[in-house]
Image (tube, rainbow, N blue to C red; front, side, top):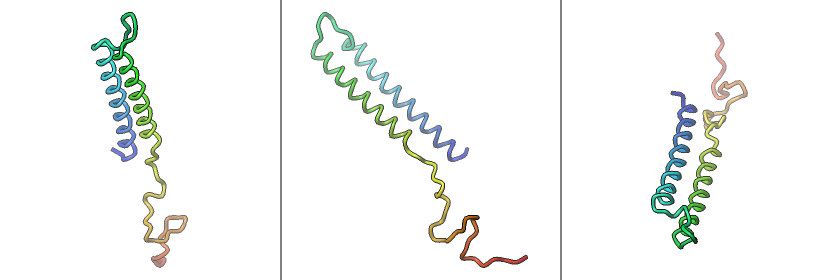
Length: 99
């Protein structure tokens, strides 16, 4: 598999994993423990849950932005800094060979 395609697929898998972890953990704490819905009036558990929900949502968005804003494609990556190259990829340190 090409390196660029592999890096792109890793980004996708990490994004899906982070989103699923966010959803499953917040659904578990919110619905299973009953902190998502109010029973008459809000309790301290509801306030803690919603603060946790907002904090983890901000962390998820920060993580996704961090993953997708990284530029893995660097056009100068293959250039050896120890050699001088002209614009046609020819090594200037080596003499021209005449055939």
